[in-house]
Image (cartoon, rainbow, N blue to C red; front, side, top):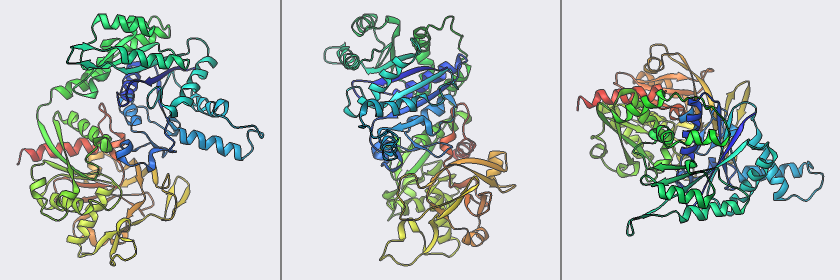
Length: 547
């Protein structure tokens, strides 16, 4: 029987509820407990799959093919527990389920209302798998007072009443602003946030207060008095130089102990924090640095490539170097020489993305890396651009292109080196798609196997000839050009088990040039860096000694 921790936010959004939840989950694990983390988002989109990265950051993909909020990436990176479809839900999904049931007659003709039908659907979602773990951490997106979040707040209020006393607690994350003009740390925004929470029937057991510095004893006592929590349950969440200090920082503040005290778990198991001490040591005591350029489309918002940035950090930890990341807009050099923009980097990474904008710049980045012998990692679209570059400049297919950009009426004829994927095998089933299908949830999503060529660079990197990685794409490299490309040095070193879909390409006689159709960044963790990122940073480190 799980104990439930509901994490809510107040005052402003983007305070770090996801990170706080992930850090708390890792601390409970360090004490020997099992955990699962969930995200309940109030927006009406069914999932983030069709949302622009500028709206919501990256889309995190699970093994079972769910397109989820980026906070699930934090959950996985900090706890190592693979997320799944039942760990992320939105208002859109909840309402969709309720309306589908209504159309099927499941409610026997009753009037459908937010209470009890929508709230019951939310409670049913929260309950999934509750007997499998010791603690279930449920983060509510947005802030208290948001209109769209009210059904979720009401649902968790009901849920806590349905459970036995002491089986649920509430953790509220707020902001303590420091007013420089008066030199004061202001508690009033937190007081108002808690007042709003209490007005809808929820009382926080623990306050986590974001601040630029420590919270003096006087302010802690004031918050405890006016917010009706114990003084030792007022936890300071100070700004940190790296998110990977969060578990140790929260432990020093007593967050995990406050949670166990709230549940009456006494005596509390002692935590084993050696894993996080090692992670912190690797971050703060790097023995060098490398410069990596990420040539992409969504460079104005780093959250669009959140998992890639973190995976590079993990690769740096494994190599005891600091990875300096520079975000380069691919449109900058679509019509000019990319060298002035790229020659300062020890390695180049081209990530995934959708749409034509910036693609010629990405192709030039791949050519620069190939011809200058600079380590290159192409992910999803980054692999496809590398293949198109090789087709144009090595295999005499000067009109090579992709159906994603060039299928519109009126465009010149081209050689479709990349095509719209119409069918593939998933488990024991054949999946079929067409260009006219809905955009949401219709890509090749989730974990798929790949077979690696013996003796290839990627087989060496993985130390295996069989892998499983997460995908999110609807366009594929056409294998009918494989022979032409391989004769010119672009090797197809990873294929789907049926041999029909290219998963990995690499350039022969190059220090490190690999393109992958999947998203390796989604499985990287600070204490278990992904093999591709670990070796990519190693190659960058070696290249930095030569420049």
